Amino acid sequence: MRYCVIMCGGVGTRFWPFSRQSMPKQFLDFFGTGRSLLQMTVDRISPVVNPENIILVTNREYYKLIREQLPEVKESNILLEPARRNTAPCICWAAKHIYAMDPEAVIVTLPSDHLVLKEDSFRKSIEEGFEFVENGNRLLTLGIKPTGPNTGYGYIQEGEVEKNYPGIYKVKAFVEKPNLEMAELFVNSGEFFWNAGIFLWSVRAILEAFDKYSPEIAQTLGAPDGVYASKRERDFIDRHFPDCVNISIDYAIMEKAQNVFVKTVEFGWSDLGAWKALYEASPKNSEGNVTQKSKVLATDCSGSIFASESDKIIVAAGLRDYIVADTDKALLIYPLKEEQKIRNIVNELKDRFGEEYI
Image 1: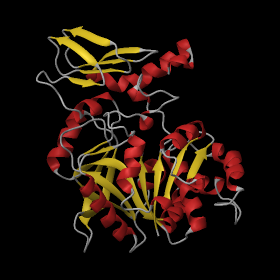
Image 2 (image 1 turned 90 degrees about the vertical axis):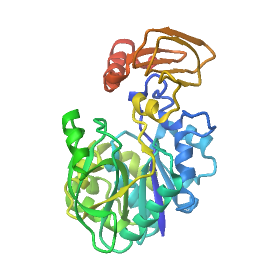
Image 3 (image 1 turned 45 degrees about the vertical axis):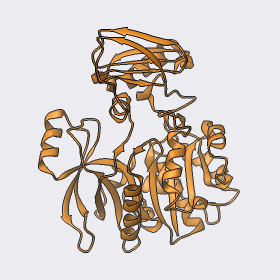
Image 4 (image 1 turned 60 degrees about the horizontal axis):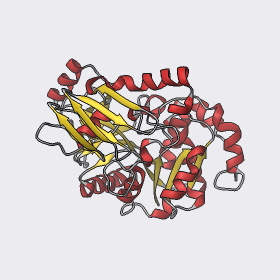
């Protein structure tokens, strides 16, 4: 049977001050559609995976938000992490939970905060990905065809094409976020694709990979028979999950395994990782400015994004490529090209002023 695991426990600090610890970006309605990014993710995958088989993995503090936004999700399908330990422990736990219910399951694992403009193409790609992993011991990731030399994404280099599966290649290499010069070389080569963090595999294949390449996580989460998918699971996780190493699935598994493949896709994707991604994904006026849920009077401004949580009017002049984001607790005025520093600013704010403003 086919399952979907949606990872929705991140904090989203690069979207501060809109994304805060109490209300991370996956729970926000950025585009005024009445649906948060998480709700849009569930809507997008539901035609492919039976909603009864959609598993949400999130931090315990977001349980109330999950219940408010997705009341239709079964209680047993919400896995609450007692601590943040990155994507590898999250995925291992979800796989063990699903294996206890269905040892023959295949899984697509999705982040909860992405934007997809071409949903039909997305669903077709997922269907084809499922068919691929259902017919072999394979770990599959989706690679997005770059639209330009973006330095905010990791890259995947394609190797040999997989016989009988057009558009699927053996992975030659994973590359961390490059500088601009390297990103330009990657894009011009035609061999590199953005790493979307979307994965497909059989539950047996991913658990075998954890046993082989990340045994410390597999052992830490190795419960006695009958614990997973039972009333005893939560107590076991509460006691053992915090002992897991904090590591991403890319480092723990994907960069080590030999049976990793990439399916190259185009479906209008953005990870909405930070303000620049939202700027690029939003409609712009004749000056190249974006206004998000805000009233703006901008004079001699261009290439900037203005956002407010209130009816407050934003008046600005002479801004070039800036972020202006206003909330009840904070006002951010920052160069768009330096958005990657916002995560460090949030850490500094926490050290100087406590958690009230983050």
